[in-house]
Length: 105
Image: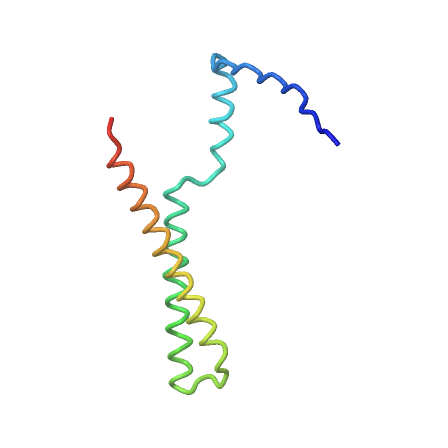
């Protein structure tokens, strides 16, 4: 039982970027998409909203406005996970920044 390895297909050459219309078309196509700043602002807003919801649910439970114990616990866990994700992303971004700063030019 012998498996022979066939010849590899040649790699196509890299095309040049002389076609400005394609580049302009790609840039014009990105106008409807969110930029990083908008994405970051929405993420921080969602984090703040989840923290506020958890606080309100806890206050409602402590003050006796609600008998449901599960809703405040779920809201607090959601807020905890959201905060943990934000801290993890922040740490990864800082690690990447420090790694870039250590690069020698």
